[in-house]
Image 1: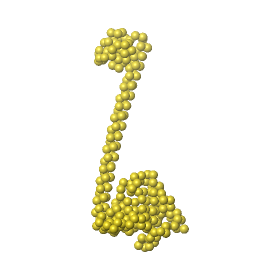
Image 2: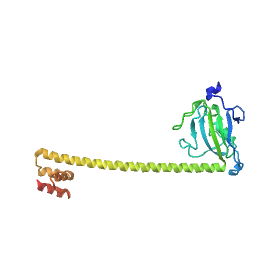
Image 3: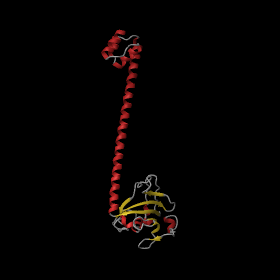
Image 4: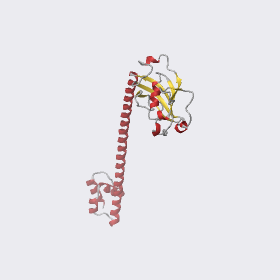
Length: 254
């Protein structure tokens, strides 16, 4: 009854219980043993509480095998390289700590984690497109222990620098996109203003003609350069020159 409530089925039987209490909360299955020279990649081959560790992992919901997080798949929030954390310090769910503390450098193993050693009764909302982890859900993790200690710490610092670089690039892209958008908006505003001026000039010329047939000298002197050019153009006259020249040309024409 407990298993039906907690995760949708009994725990797997092809694994060993690695909890100190032998309470069946974390079950391990070795997938790939650590290389014989694994210890050469760090000062020790197996972590103890407080050691900085680096791991790659994929997390699944046990009852349906749906992936909710991964360090190796960019679709997920951590899909940009190993996770770095101090082992056994509660920075991850309890079952994950227990799992990692059982591993050697270079080892890959699968772990079934009972819900009370996972996210428990509160569950965990999914990030992005990842599924939600419902309350009292058993989990499965495939974990590779990449490194321990100074190497892991260096990897962590490198990952932090990489994250900072990515953030700087994101900000630069955002600034560039903002500048491009502003330039486009300015160009559009300029084009709209010119179109409005041209429209107004044509309307002024049309209104002047409709109001009294031929333009008067007073009408001409009130015209702005756009209107002057429109009127001159409608008469087949040159539109070159400043406002004074345009005014004199149109006055001469009327």
